[in-house]
Image (cartoon, rainbow, N blue to C red):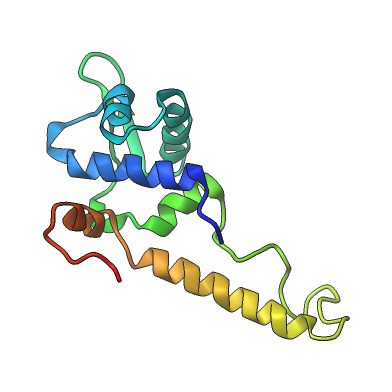
Length: 144
């Protein structure tokens, strides 16, 4: 699996919101300036994140975006899935369905790709915005 630019940008934007939660709603312009992300693309990403229920927006003076849930409740898997769709190693199908095992070795590989997809989702579910905020502030150890 390769995390797309959208997935990376979405993660960076939400991390910025988590780091500056106490500041209240944050404008797209401010998020773009803090993260170095292109504002027009960031606007599209934030709309997708809003549709997924990860952020809320407030219009008008003092408006902007805020997290829709606590940072402890938002995982990297949720963020990436919101902008990229399901996290999986590939779109190969499931073993033993629709003739998926009609060819030599195909079923065992389908099972492995499925296991890999599960492990990727699980790994990304292990990291919350609270974890990332703590790492960014030097309060938690970095992975690896």
